[in-house]
Figure (cartoon, rainbow, N blue to C red):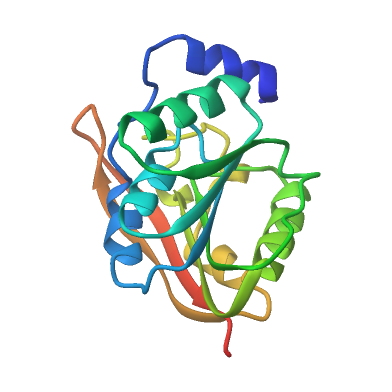
Length: 193
């Protein structure tokens, strides 16, 4: 899907996803010391805004202008500052590294996925972390994109962590809106100081 497709998808409802942070993001980020954070493919901003509420200095990037406008509105409504950028991650580059790079439900075909992970790992500051959460290929079709080629598994996530130290890469169960159980790949990696 391109930016126009996502704009249309976001325009279908007042809020496409929950306003609350992803459960795995909240569980893992709450264990880290706040610093600078980059939320890649931030969508409507639920994770970015929540991280700002926890004391992080957050930049959120997404190529859907509709989603970015909603994210800005959510930040204002909840009284936090987040720098939101309307840009295609395949072309965008940050000005500095981050203490946390978050990739939550970004599903790209190859070779875009490998390129994105290479860039994302390079944006992790010394002592910083990369947190990845994505639909797991083991439950393809239960939730997330139907194409198994863009889904995650712990082995692929760990392999694409490059020179970061993988603290864990695992599949975690999650109940969907329809009551089914899906798996998500969750990986936390760190760049040594």
